[in-house]
Image 1: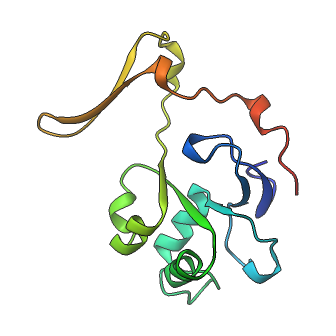
Image 2: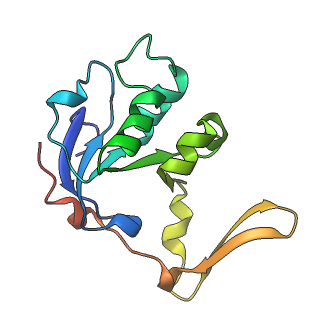
Image 3: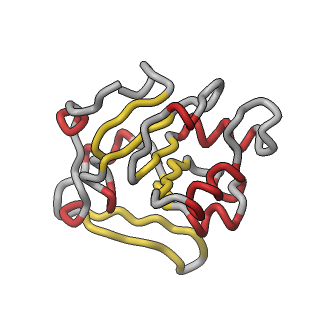
Length: 149
């Protein structure tokens, strides 16, 4: 449903929070969180995270890093942030610690890998993460069919 609504509801279908009822937010401009149904999980899509990064003091939007901090500290809600490469360092350290980060990389060549191939992400000299495709969760468009406005 991304790209059609500022926010929507559904079950998370990616990562460790799969099957958790979720409020997905892709645009924080003009969004009043108090009018959104509370879910056990709030997922800020990369567009919303980009808005938070560009306007951290809430001079333009009613949602800021303090809002996320308060949700994590005062409500029984998990907050996920979908973060694109080169953006993670722009998120305040305490927010990175308190939230679930979904690091999102886009690379169409991944579709060419076989199940027994591997993905390696290097973050420094001799420092990396590596996993085989067969150990990864595979998500398809069909997994999003239960999203609702």
